[in-house]
Image 1 (cartoon, one colour):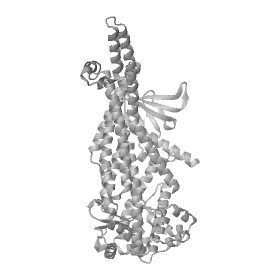
Image 2 (tube, rainbow, N blue to C red):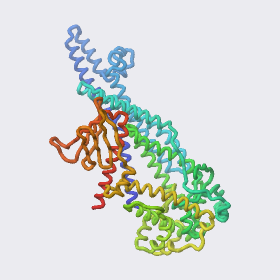
Image 3 (cartoon, rainbow, N blue to C red):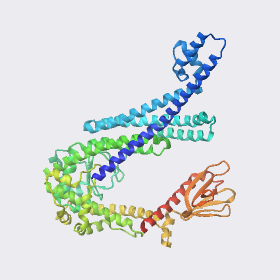
Image 4 (cartoon, helix red, strand yellow):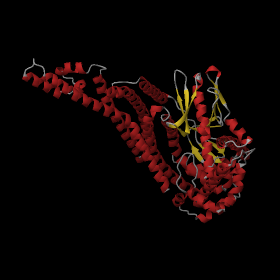
Length: 619
């Protein structure tokens, strides 16, 4: 726990530091540059004017003193702010619209305003986060206010900083070297334009907020006793029973009042999810404790607040991570992320309090030992199933046919509970839940006043229930078969894709796997030439038909040119003047460019991952 807290604090500090960098780097650089330029111009202008006044024989000594005094009290940098009638001539001559002085003045002001806006947003993120900590009733309102403020203001930050970057791309070189570079300005302009479009488009785009549950509905006719028991427990908790019960094979139980979807069917109202595999390892008293715990969340209003807040959290998260992938939009990403992290801490603290309260309700309605034993069994089952799936996924051969994960777990759980590794695993095991951060097992035991020594965990987990609620669901077996079948099919597909990244390949069987996911891809070039990308490397028919194996490649750089694009391959070994490179001409690639870049990058990445895994295996 201490290590986890340290890592969380370290991550928070890192995000805070990156927020400061990305929020203030461009406007601070603009401010430093404009202030330097304005002060330098003030000094140069005053020196030039004083020299001219001093050498003007037409002026008397008094006139010279008066003129010198005026320009000393009116630096060039103040011309754009000079609004008094007597200063109008000075203003119009020096600060005409779009002049150099006019641009530097407003760039300086824009930098100050942007820094002020960034500071205000940082304070707002901290204040709104503090409100979420201080009062649960204010949590929804504070997040809605923060959501609107942060998303709109972050888009404004992107617009302002993008404009500054384009301005700097011209004036930095023009001021210091009296020259400017069209390509640099164009690159900055394209990046800025893309960032502004992406930020505004994402701001107004309706992001998905689906909540799909993998499972099947349990009709009342298929489990009348279970439905009746749920109603009885709901009555004792003094809350309305769920509108639907969904059975699945995930290793958790939960309730939600958020709109959700099951097998393409939209559900509204109160939904209770039950895990059939977990119901099989819990006796009915232990399962009653779990059901009472979940119904307590309904009675306490936890699911109501989650239903209101959940979709907004999801949309905010999606917006935050989209702002990371839009180039210059990253200037706003870390501010959004910092606010979300602060809010997450408040939610986590509230989640622990809700879990403690629900545990106490369940213990009061059933028995303290029932809720504790259910927690031990659920933790053990989830931990062991994770180990089984991890071992299956780690195997370096293809899986043929059904995996039988459910059978592996059911048969292996009792022996596992009697093993030496079991207690160590249980010390760090969590009770899985899709919506909340659950407190550690020992703390939950203390909360309900029933402690079970670690030595007794194994016997509890190995005890086979005499009767379970799974036995009361007529469709339970069929539901499990269908869900496990679909789950294992996805598992096998993902495992084979993983093998395609692991294999060199060294055999024909391995080669067939790699080729299924990484078949050769060819691209036509000018003059009847072509370039092929394969798991082995790059093969071109131009320049004598060179082949470059991925093992030779240290880096890839794609260079656009009006005379024909070029792929620059950097090799691991050294040449005469540094790293050795090979230039692969790609004239005529045309509209295939993006597809080629994606294929070359993906196939090279596959090779790197494969070599890295081989190195790990040797170590």
